[in-house]
Image 1: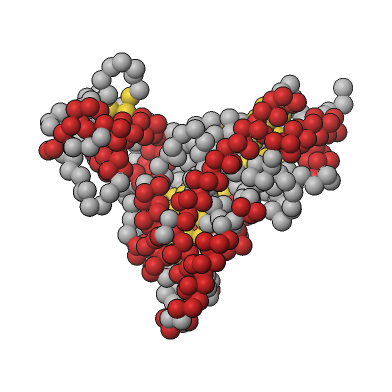
Image 2 (image 1 turned 30 degrees about the vertical axis):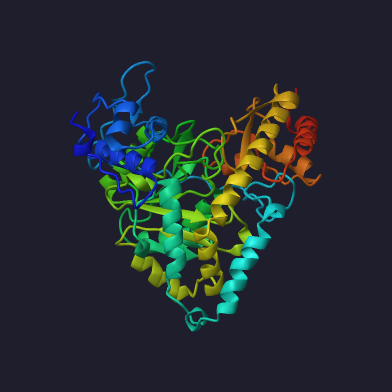
Length: 478
C-alpha cells in the first residue's frame, strides 16, 4: 500500500481528525480502492505520517473494526475485511405474502415507569433551553415571524447536519435536510411521495419483522403492501425476503426496534444492494442510536450509501423531549424538494422560533452535553434492569444485552406464554410495559418490552418481582 500521504490528506481546519481518517478509509474500501486482505499501515506509522496522536488513529481503526470494515486479528497487521458481493441485479420476484395485521397496536399514550421510548423528562435541560428560546424571542427578527421555508429554518438544518455528520457519520448537504414535527409525519409523507400504488409493484414495502407497529400502520395507510422480512441478532436479512421487489424498505439498522440488535455491515450492504437492484428508497429510522453503552455508536447506514437510496430519519424526542415536536429527514437530493412540497401542501411545520432556538441549543454544545450526561445515567438504569431480570426471572425470561437505547427486550423461554395477559396484569400496576408479540407480522415470539429511561434500580428490582408473579397468569395450563 502506498504511503498514507498519497491517499489520506487531513483538513485540520475542519477538525474531527479521527472522523476524517475513518471516513477516508471507509470510502476507499467501499469504492474498491482497497481490497480484502490489503494491509493498512500500523497505527503508529499512520499517526507519524499524518502528524496526529496515535490514539486518534487507534480510535478510527477500532471504529472501522466495530463496523466490520477491518479484520480483527490480535497481534497481526491491520487488514481490510472481506465484504460480501452484491446479489445479482434484478432478482426474480415471487408472489407477495400479505401479512396479517396486528390485533392491536401498543398503547404509546400509556404512562408508567417502564414506558418504552420516553426519555427521563425530569432531567430536561430547562435552564439552557430557556436561555436559547428567550434569546430568540427577544431578538424580534421579522424573518422569524413569517411562514419560513417549507424544509425548515436554515440555521437548524445546518446545525442538525453538523451534529449528525460528527456523531452518526451522515454525509449530505444542508439543502437535503427537512424539518418535520415528528418521525411519524416523515414516514407518512415520504411513503406517499415514493409509493405508486397505481403502478405494478409500486406499492411494495419491505418491513422488519418484528418491527415498529406505528410505522407499519403508516405505510399501510399510504397504500403500501407490506412484505415482512425476518430480523435476527444481526438485523434485517433481505436474503430471506419472500415477496416482490420493493419500492420502499423500512429499517432501524443501528438499533433495531424492538430487539435492540445492530445490523452487521454485511446485512447493511445487502440492504443497499437490494434497494439499488429495485430502485427502492430505504427509510432509515435512527430513533435513539446516540445512546450506546460500552461502545461507540455504529455509523448510520446513510453514510455508506452511494446510490442516493437512503432517507435518514432522526428525532429530538428521545434525546430531549417528545413535547418539542421536532424531527428531521436527510434525504436523497432528488427526493428532498418533493418532500418539502408535500409538507408545504399539508401545512406541516415546526414553529420557527422553536427551530432557531434549537439551532442555537445544538450549535452551542448543549445537546452534546445533555446526551453525554443522560447516556451515563441511562447506562446505569439499563444495567440495573438487565441485572434485576436475570436475578428474579432468569429461568422464565431472557433479556437482551442492553447495549444501547431507551428500551430493553426480554423474551419468555416458554414459547406458549401469553405475553398480553402478563402485560395486562403488570400495567394494572402502572408499569406501561408492552408485549413483544404485538410487534410481529408473522409468527409471534412472546416477550416484554420495557423502557429503562425513568426506572431506578429499586424500580427495576420491584418490576422484576412483579413480572415473575404475573407470568403465572400468562403461563399455559399444565
